[in-house]
Image 1: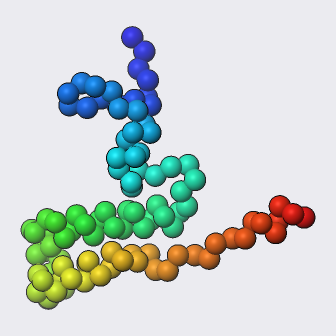
Image 2: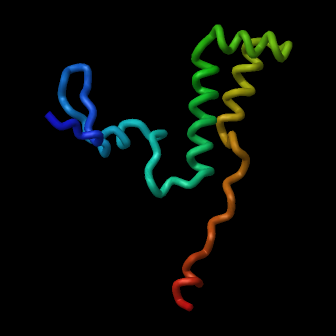
Image 3: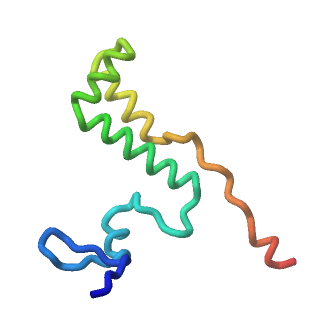
Length: 98
């Protein structure tokens, strides 16, 4: 039996293709994804994990000497642009015409 690495199975046993997996989970990325987009997804996932796990959130709150609510608000604020503003887009239209 050969194993196809582009398919995975669900707990029910049915197969899921890579395209279906990427459609379901936005952060899995694709070949055309920029470094900025990938890093932004990683940082947002990390902040979401910190906010959703109370013990982890309280650890950060104690380490920063802040309340849990204030730390949660800071993490949620950082999720807007976790890596700063996006880099400027390159204009490749002028390169093609030449």
